[in-house]
Length: 305
Image 1 (cartoon, helix red, strand yellow):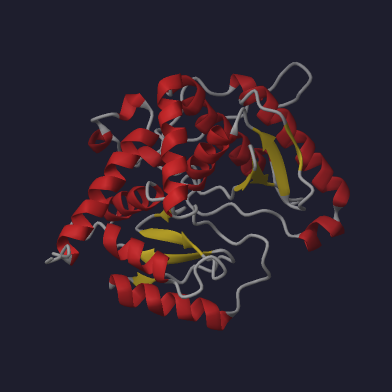
Image 2: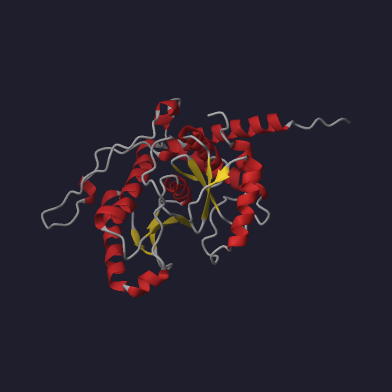
């Protein structure tokens, strides 16, 4: 029997089509058929509001939110917000505790979610209603350029003693309120069931590809090897950004970076964007030869955007 193998072109087309279909499942219905209208332009930062006791009134600050970065909107942060290091927390545990207390207060007020300091230094644990919500928030918040980790039916968000109320603390609370708003207010129950089924199918094909948070710092030799493989596979140049758990590839234009990022996330690989560059997780344990990452990015790259 003759077996006709799919050409690289047809395989790429099929992968892109599947990614786009997955993305439609993930996106709130308000974006159906109109993602081309979404612009990566920020509405501007909402000013802090205060209650009668002088505390920030986190529940009275937003009447609306920017479009989701998942839909092509502007990421909440231009650069990645990372957690405080264990060393910095040991230097000033009192200030760190105050930062955590304010993040807990803000998330409970603005997102109506329970939060508490995680057992992992530098992280806050935010309880979600179920694992599907946690997985969806993981993807949505990653694309907003806020560090986030998955822990069963909860997410972990960054905290550090250097976090300021008007900057980093506000960033964490805002992005939690924003993404929770879209999850709770714009995704109906039937669609959430579809998202749960999508996550189950994707995980059965290949587990969610995310940073290896629990490993020691990745060596420069390993990072250089990943860089070479990705550049060879995609034809893109890597960026000079230095993140412990991420590596950047310059897509040349913002539209190309947005389209590529969204396809990759819809294919069960975390990805985020800074201007014209996409950032991919470093995880040499899950992908020791970098084959999955290189293949997926080269296949889903928006070359003509």
